[in-house]
Length: 412
Image (cartoon, rainbow, N blue to C red; front, top):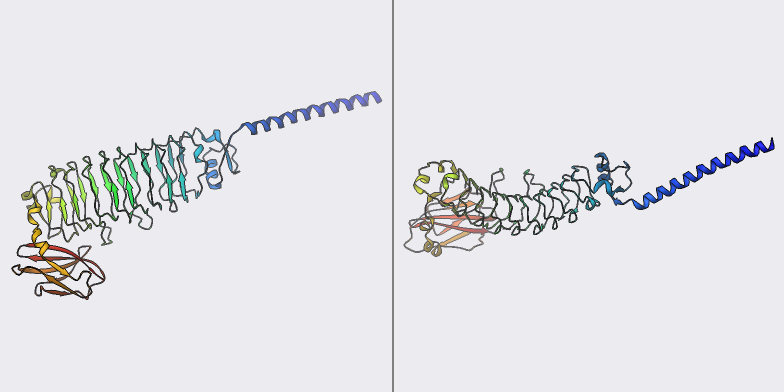
């Protein structure tokens, strides 16, 4: 009996030993796997949860990391409105071609290691102040509208075709604040929307020969050069959203080198000179040049048809004081403009006029910068009491026997 009991005990001990050996090797294997497996750090729990929800994070646990092998072959990622504030980990999405991460809470986004990226939608990240796409040579589509960007370097995006960095949804409460936009390296650009960049003063389009559509309403442009954009079809610089304020402050717009132009909107742009004599006016079926009180002449291909309201000019919207001519320069009496003076400028209450003795003055009108007539005087041409006007910038139009004189003055 004693021998039999010993035998049973030995067998039991041996079985336990075998189990322990197996467990030991399993532990060693797990440790080895952990040591050999590569993980990507994902500190934002909302980002990791979004990956889990999409079946990308294979362990299914929010633990601040994801297997690199889970993400390195992903070509498309859509994580919209997931309250993500930190995109750390995106750098290991090595094969990523399309990324849609709009409507999150990002403050900066660095995609410089995602070299395969060709489509990026990062709109409406209202806290986003920094976007790095300098190394994304394959990028063809970029929507970074409705963010909080103050600078945007696109010099490395040689294949960019569509750039939306304005506010296409017309939400004026959220916009970018780009002051300068250099697109001289974006030869393939076709569509550009920079609308509602309220401080945007300069756009370099000198090397964008493929550009077809340009939207730049409610910016701060004082000039725009589209002479190097022969494919341009739509140029929208002004539009009426009911604000009755200047969309841009452009003294002149010249589209004489844009023979394919189909739509031109320069209303509320405060322009004085508009040249649309491009040799192909029949294509330009949509033109809006309203609310430009100092615009008296538009240079066109056929002044007779234009002034008679014949197509396509019948669908052109202009102010009542605006006429058409094939050479507007002949209608601008520069000698008269130089000899007529108004002072002081800025002025407080009384605006004085000085002009040659032999000049017959017919009337003097004052408009605000949105084109609304405020005052009209046809009796006293030596001075005008403007004490009832609010502070700001105004346009004075003097009708004379030799032509019109248009001047700006400030009431301060």
